[in-house]
Amino acid sequence: MQHERALVWFRRDLRLEDHAALHQALTQARRVHCVFCFDSEILAALPSPQDRRVEFIWESVRELRAALQRAGGELHVLHGPARQLIPELAGALGVEAVFCNRDYEPQARARDAFVDGALRAAGRRLYQLKDQVIFDHDELMTQAGTPFAVFTPYKRAWLAALGEGELQPFAVAAHSARLDPAAAPATPTLEQLGFQRTNLATLRLPTGLGGARALFEAFLPRLDHYRERRDFPALAGPSYLSTHLRFGTISIRELVRAARARSSPGADCWLSELIWRDFYFMILFHHPRVVDHAFQRERDEVVWEQDPARFRAWCEGRTGYPLVDAALRQLNQTGYMHNRLRMVAASFLTKDLGLDWRLGERYFAEQLNDFDLAANNGGWQWAASTGCDAQPYFRVFNPVTQSQRFDPQGAFIRRYVPELAACSAKEIHAPWLIDAQRRRALGLTLGESYPHPLVDHATARLAAIRRFARPAR
Image (cartoon, rainbow, N blue to C red; front, side, top):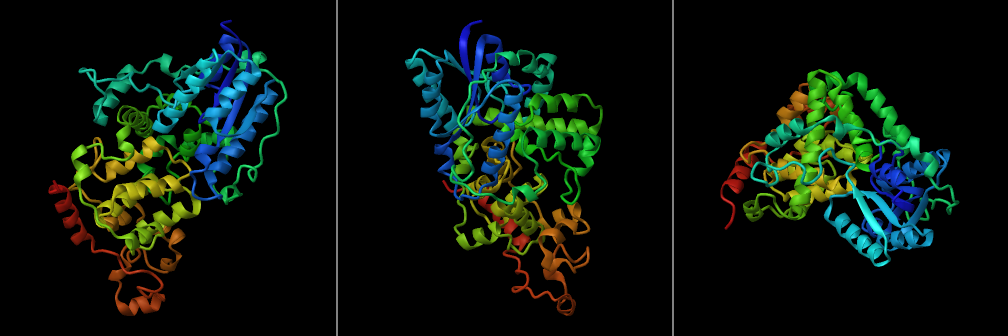
């Protein structure tokens, strides 16, 4: 044993099994304590006391604590600035080392550097392990020794480098006798954290380790059909595991193992989506400027429209384009938006309305249950044609044809835009084209019961192409 006592700091890895930092601590120390900190520096920045993500984490932490107790250990649950409380707890417990899984976001890296310094000053060590990705920030590089900027060659390198070692689960149960059961204070209530209950319990999003397991097992029979079903928001096509991946209630290694175990177009397509996740983590690590700036530096010179009223209409699902409105209303009501609709909504904001991608990116950051800076930023910059390997600026999603193709019967639109429920499958995608007599029969009054389109798509598309073709210098 290298250490007598160690502390495992849980963050976005709220599970007990296949956990790199916990495994490493249990194999290197005789006694292992565990901690999770509700970081007040993160919580204070949230705009509302009703935040589904905080409730999701809180429920998941309670389940994690119960799992640790059943395994013979305990979880210290703290509330306050992590950069202060983690070194303090390490001192109070007399540990020699703190183990955690690496984070790639700039603010998290700054926090971890601060904690590392405080621990070193007290004669302790901080060990950071790779856990939330398959390949770490610098494990895959181009032949020139630089980070990849295009997904396809990155994916080829990723698949070529993948071996059994990258997917080997980190055993925990075999070493659980080293977990320290010393009593810890009660978990703070949601109210003590400054937050309130949301509608999380009524959504199709079970929390914690058990919730992740249930969703994963429900997805496995659908996995082989993922490719042909994933783009249709009215179908159960996705895995719905994105929030669980975000907070680590399930291991990325287990998901990749499941994808590789199947030989089907659906499994291959899903694996590709998991590789995109690694790709965006790598981009954020090597190019932290993308948080506030375009990956393509020249795109920082694009002149965006300034129209707060249109931005509010987009946020509230009042654009007059039914699929876009349904997507935003789904987000506002549930904290979830289907991946195809994220692309459609982002394209509409940046190309049809000509508004800065950062506005939409920040709105998604406030609303998404699965908000992950790397993926959210990468997805928005892809749609806005400002990012790495992005959608070409001259390709602009048509919100009507996207609606006709991916919600052909209007089932998804009817769920979230009920004022259009009486429209036929042909009418529902562009209600402004319905003749006046038919609209009266439907009880549909444009501008009252449903808004006029904010823009004409064909005109807006040409304006978007001009904006990108000749950015200001």
